Length: 249
Length: 284
Image 1 (cartoon, each protein chain N blue to C red):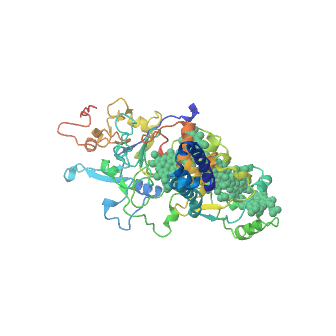
Image 2: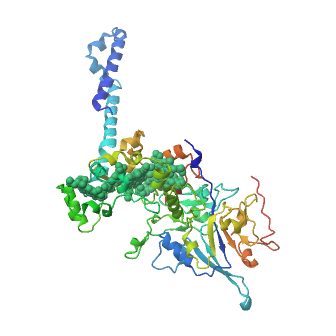
């Protein structure tokens, strides 16, 4: 993104060039020349209003893309922190130890205390998060109210089996490097829709559609685009894409 | 990357209801409401704005006492195929200005996306079967009942239309299980999914399945004839569809050995019978 300063710099060299080209012709009219230096000469032309327009425009873009979205999302900390790297060294079945498929093919998703109690029945170290986890949750038999970054709206059906088992996709493709993180990031909730920031991504991504990784945004468009590429299904009579009931319920 | 394995066999889910077996008990209606989080009013006496994805109608042969015969007819959404097969020219889909209702050629199911619907109710006017219902109020669940709602069916809000989905969420869950077991599609080992009404029927009057699958009971009873002008018209003389001559080509079939019941399925004039009537030729 260019800043306001960049823009003023962009404009002035061009204008400087124009004026130097024009000087030979204008030299026959000494009245104008003597009336002042180059800056003042341009006050009467269209340059300055355009300049102000550009400054205002850029300021509004910055406000709309970077500042306003900050008001739109409230930041909530997870109830306790969790270290994926540390735990991947401890468990023996990898991600599956905590994020597994049930007998009926549904995905267990966010882990329950049942996956932790084997090791955390008692406090093992002196980490304050572990202490809180054991004392507040495990001992009282209360589940941790984890906030789910990728949770979709109620009307969406998502199938981990179809992507992980059938299409052999990596967790990181849709979730980013979550499995290699040492702490949980702050959860951002949209005031209006109540959805997680991960669904609609950063607002700039939406504006310019400049997404580099699948996981940076996961709204309907993103699901549909990949489905078009990977499956080429056109079973919806209305949209010639996937039928609505593939992802909705 | 359009690989062959991404395409599975096209299905056409349909239902055949044996009206000789139906006792009108209403178990299908109850099962349907419980399964699909269908909202209800505190006072259901005014049936005009009741929401009934599945509704049992009662009618008789119009004769006086000793000869009176009664028939009960359960009515889910017909999931109309429209003219010329899988074209999706269902009455509701073709009028929806919002793309909220759609026809899926993979399953033959007419979908309804509540968040997309803005409640104009064109589809309700277009549906000849009264299968669509409007939410005049936000659902109010009796204290504690919201805990019993199914997470597999999204709840509706005031101002949207809803209807039977052939329990499509059960298809989604069945596919999940199939993928997790490393299969691609239903086969001999993984049976097809069932709707809640089918399972609830105490007399097994409802048979539900893939009409395209020649090994399925529903196909064997209906014997759909796709070369007929009325796509999917049954080859079984005892099987009929409601208002067949409208060419909506429903995928819900009814079976009855009683002629007057079959006759009640459409407006047959004078000498016409369900067997000999002619479809009016329409020139496009």
